[in-house]
Each structure stands twice: as C-alpha cells, then as structure tokens.
Image 1 (cartoon, rainbow, N blue to C red):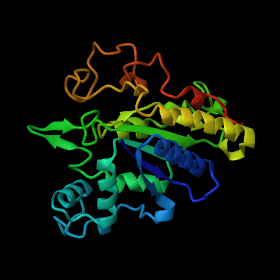
Image 2 (cartoon, helix red, strand yellow):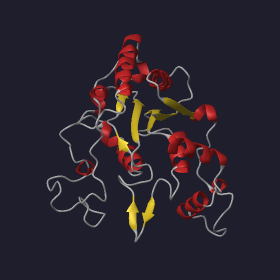
Image 3 (cartoon, helix red, strand yellow):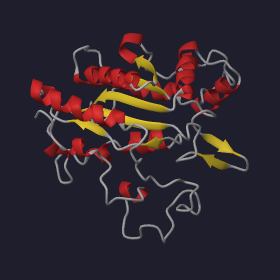
Image 4 (cartoon, one colour):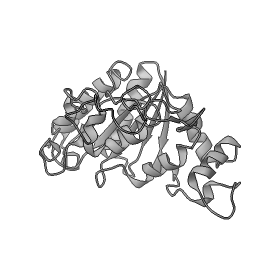
Length: 271
C-alpha cells in the first residue's frame, strides 16, 4: 500500500516530527511505500490567492471555485500543487501530523488543503446537480488519520472540559475536510501534555502510536453519515427519522456510543 505523510512543525525535535518519523519507520518496515510532505522544510506556500491560477478563466473577478475547477480541468495549476495532488491520488491512506494551534491545524497545513483540494478533484457535482461530497468525494476509498500533538492536559478536552471535546474541535478537519472529500476517517490519535512531555511520557506516546500505525488498514473509521446514503433526504438536513433526539455536530455521526478519539487520545500522555 502507499501512504502519504504530511506534517507541519518547524522544530525537528518536536513531538510532531518524532511521531512522523515513527510513522515512516513502521510503515516501511511493514512493506508499504511511504511518501512525505514536510511542509515547513518544503517552504510550502500557505496563502491561496491569484498566484495559484496562472491561466485565469475570468480576469475581471477572482472566484476561487471557478478558477480552481478551471485550473484542474485544464492542466494549468502550479507545479507544487500538481505534485502534491499526484502524491495524494497515488496514496491509499493519508496521515496528517500537526500540533494543535488555536484549536486547529497550523496555517501552513490549512494552506496545503486550501490549494491541493481542487474543485473537480476533491469535491464538486456530478450529473444533474448531485453533490460530490461527504463520503462520495474524489478521495473516496482512501483512509485518513490525524496524529495531533496537544499542549494541554487531556482533562481540558474531556466532555465537560474548558476547551471542549477534542473530537468536536477537530470536526471541521475530520468531517468537513477529510470525510467531505470521501475519505474514511479513523479515530484521532492525540498526545496530550506535549508542551512539557518527559522521556517516559514520550516513550508511552511512541508505543501507543506504533500500535495505531500498525492498524492503519484494520481500525474501523468514524461512522460519519454519508450525504447520499439516505440520512439526508434533501441532501442538506437530516431526516426527521434520523437521530431525532440529537442536534449539533455529533448528530452527523451514526455511532456515538464509541468516542471519536482513540483510547490514547483521552489519556494525558506524559502530562
């Protein structure tokens, strides 16, 4: 199998980098082909702007969806974007390694998604206006996994913790970015207390992460509801018969009896 590792941290000794190195070693040892995108080392251009469209469809007004679709369909994307798309399309699984900065991924990784998730590639419409998203996107069949380094303790991200549950904070990424484009998203792996983790805590985190990487193609994905699977009769709102007692983010997960985080994501490793 082919796996793409994308990681975003400028410090080589960071928890993020160490886990990315573990991913590479474990996957290579198991006979997989591993591709990497170290965004800081690459000097990745994070800003999505007019420079991404060397051959504009409309010179008067910049519409990102229109220009993204035009550039992808007509082979006039920038070379760096084309290369990342080539790696992503070849991959059977994607692992995103990043620190939790302001409750999300670093800007450089968000910029990777902004520029690489082209209209017509990752999402769009098919046929008579049928949406090409939420389980049926262009990356359908691929697996995705987040490995997140969290500075604070796990208790802050517990169901009633001051920061809110981690799986809900990451919902825009797991559901709104990865599942949106069709990927099967595995429960998130998190290392809590990463800002002050000691050697013992790091050893525990590494051991737990090794086990997760080894199960990359075995673990069950989060049971997000597919847009075209019948739960959204009008393709927009959950049917009255679907989870009638629930609203909000978790109503869009079919099985909420099982937390969306790995068991280790709920443990303060090294904190």
